[in-house]
Structure formats: C-alpha cells, structure tokens
Amino acid sequence: MPRLAPLPAPQFNLRQTLESGQVFHWLDDGAGGYRGLIGARPVRVRQQGGELWVTPGAEAAAARYFALDHDLEAIYASFPTDPAMTDALAFCRGLRIIRQPLWECVATFLTSSMKQVAHIRQMSLALRRRFGRPTRGGEDPAVYPAPEILARATEADLRACGLGFRAKNLLQTARLVAEGAVDLEAIRTMDDAAALAELCRLPGVGPKIANCALLFAYERLGAFPIDVWIERVLRQLYFKGKRNVTARRLQEFAARTFGPYGGYAQQYLFHHARKARAWNAACSSTDLMRPQERFSQ
Picture 1 (cartoon, one colour):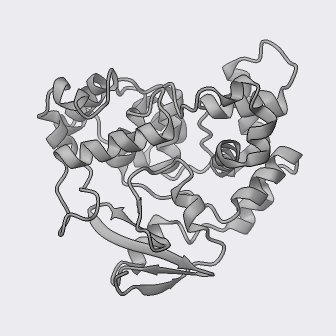
Picture 2 (cartoon, helix red, strand yellow):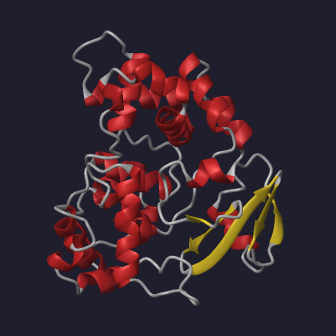
C-alpha cells in the first residue's frame, strides 16, 4: 500500500458508499482499501475508524467527492421512522451520496438500463479501457472517455464494450453534448423541473435515469429515482396488498414521505434491499429478487 495521508471522516462508511450502486469503477486493492479515480485523478483510499486515508495531495478532492460535509444527523432526522426505513438506516449508516463528475455520471447511468450493478460496472470499465486515457502505471482504471471521444466512435465500437442496445443512446448523447446541443453545466442553474426535462431530452433517458443524474451528478438530494428495485421495495413495504398503484402515485408518495433528503432515503432503501440477508431471505420467493436491474429508463 502506498503512503497515504489522513483525512477526518466521522460518520462515514467507505465500503458501504463505494459498493452501494452509485459509482462503478473503484477496485478493491486487496489490502483493505480501494483504488480508483476522482475525475481524472488516480486516488487510493482506505478507512481506519473515523479517518479516511487517501493519496497525499488528494485530501480536499476526496472530502468533496465523498461529501464529507453533508450533515448526516440532519439527513437522518428527516427520515420517516417506519420499520423499513429504520432497518435501512441501521444497515447503511455512514453511506454518503458521492458528488460525481457530470458527464461520467450521466453516461454511466445512461448505460444502466435493464442491467445489474455488476454488469454496469463491466460496461463502465470496458469503455474506460477502450476509449479512456490510461493512468500512469496502468494499475488504476482509465479516465472515463470524454463525450468528444465517444462521439467519434461507431455504434459497433460501443457494442463491443458490452453495451448492446444502449450503444446507440450513448453515441447519440455523446454527440449532442460534444456539439453543444445539450449543455450539462448549464443544467446546474436550472430548477429541478427544468433540469429533469432537459436531461430527458437525451436519447434513452426517462424520469428514472434523469432523477439519478440529478441526485448523483447535480446533488439534488431530494431527487428520488424509482428504479426496478425501489419500485419493488415501495410496493412490498409501503403498498403491500394494494393493487393499481401507479408510477405517479409512487413518486408522489416518495416526495411526501421522504422529503428534502429523499435521495439519501432512496439509496439506503436500495442498498439495504440488495445486500441485507434478512431482506433477501424474506423476499426470495417473490418478484423482488428477480432480476437486479438498476434502471429501465
């Protein structure tokens, strides 16, 4: 393990954060830590108690990336106190919503449609290997390819990275962004409704993926992406036995129930549903366990 520098990180769980299905390129270093990139910067991280040990010089970047300034106590106080949310909080405590680079986040979740977390990771790493700029030494993942680079690719090139039908959407989106037809930076200044609508202009992006981009790239912590897993969680835990519960009703329920930090609540419910043994055992005979996609659109 290279020499690392300490960074205070109270109320933080590195493993829960990196393995919760919000970011897909970090690699276990085999020594209790991870290696990956923050933007284009290679970084090593590991945790010891309330300290995060990081590549020297990357302390400020890591603190921002891992959102160590988020007030988790205030966030937790906003959660409902029903058994489902209480169990998810107990399981995920210390998990933080990462501040991801805009293009990397939008592009990655654009390719997530109808795929398990492991498959999204495989596609992300394949795109980096084929089109991204290698990092020094070649041990870390390559930098995620810029839209200008992907815009010059062919659909066949992207399909070779395992994207399937998602290749067309990623290629078209890369071209729109590279040409300036869609300005991802400008979305930062828009209100939530306008930002959602602008993201939905991208090929293959519907409300689910757009809300994910709002949460993970634009730090709209009230955004509540309802993917396949979360829809099943909501139906099983909050609408059990009820029929004809529409997607709109689920979204309205989420906004009313989980409030200004609904994105945190969503991620805790999602990660708990995927990982907790008690939940998996309870739901193993239901449709909740098949399959494990993140997003449809």
